[in-house]
Structures are given as structure tokens and as C-alpha cells.
Amino acid sequence: MTSTFGPYGWKMEAAEHEFPVGLDRFRWFARFLLEGQVLPFFKSYTKLLLSPPVTMVKSWARLQPRTEHLLKALVSQSADSKEKLCEAWKKNPKYLLSEYLEWIQESLHNEVSLKWPPSHK
Image (cartoon, rainbow, N blue to C red; front, top):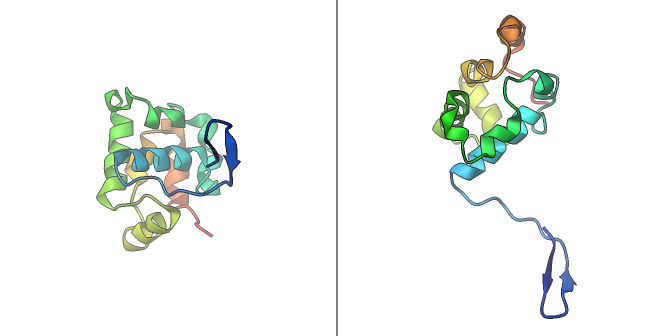
């Protein structure tokens, strides 16, 4: 994050900030996951999603069941990072599969199911 200070707009050095704890943190993580920014596996399906990933962070996202199901699944395992997501897959390899299948065309369900869980290396 970059910022300025004072009446002259002095530039301050860029600094990283952790996203605050809360549902928005999970919504943004879900968006980045669906976009393929967290794991490359998802990138190959991004253009084939039934809704764009940005839907996760829209104010009306609650109106789409697929967004709520994905959000609830992430919250249930506190999966708001790549590391936590991979830990959840170690415990349950089918974690998030049904929620992700809601986002993709039915014709791709078998293909995705066979590749699940995504490689996290």
C-alpha cells in the first residue's frame, strides 16, 4: 500500500498490510482463488466459470447461492490463505470440491473431480 502525508502530499514508502479479519477477508481470498492467483489449477478454468470471480466481493453476492456456499466452506475451515487451504485438503481431499463445482459448467465436473484436490506446489 502506498500513501501520502500532510498538506504537501509527501509520499511515504510502500508498506504491506494484512487484510483485516472478517468475512471480507474470505470473500477476497475466494475471488483470488477463483481467478487463479492462489493456485495455478484454477487459472485454467477462470474463463469457464458460470459467474466472474469478482462476484464474490459484490454487495449483491449473497443473492447467488454459489457465492454463499463457497464463502461458508472457506469460513468453516478458516481457509483464508494458500497454506490454510492446503492444510484443509490434507485433512479432507474433497474439501471445496462440491462448492467449486457449483461455479463451473456441468460438462467439466468429471474432469475437475478427477484432478481434485489441486496441486499446491
